[in-house]
Length: 224
Image 1 (cartoon, rainbow, N blue to C red):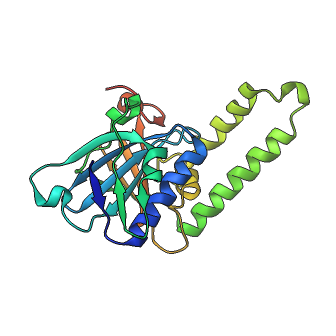
Image 2 (image 1 turned 180 degrees about the vertical axis):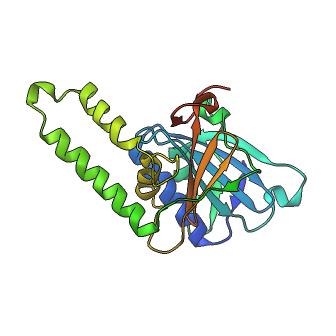
């Protein structure tokens, strides 16, 4: 069985925390793992936010003891979480699963360019807080007969699809970053673009969104 040797207990704990947060939103979540050299990337898609979440981790030694191979597999997030041994800083890679459609469409590895206009970290957190408060207030004001899933979804789409500052980044991407533990008090977030993708990057993880067919509103494409 494949064993990932993480750089230290902290890397193992951060990976476990990320997997736990994904499972909070989807108990059947899958993640795609890519490892090469001493870098591991874990991709997940929390359904509540319709974004792609990316957590990277440092490995203690090159994958497969330096052999010229890479790891690229989609696995159960729950099984991977159970296989993380924090004190030993290791993780057994579970058996592969049939990947969901999003796992076949990942952001490019290179070609990212900085995008100006992202508000300061405190302003981003305030923006998310205001959006959550607005959603709660507007849904509570609905008459009982209008408080349907369709109406709640409509209000949510209106609020979370708004753009952040002078960028094309949707508010839901910032909300996802905060909910997944990426948007912390320390560490400056930055925004980048590549092709039809936008990526909100922080020292703790990234959130990526994509314009469907390169046009229109931003979302994660689910087809090649």
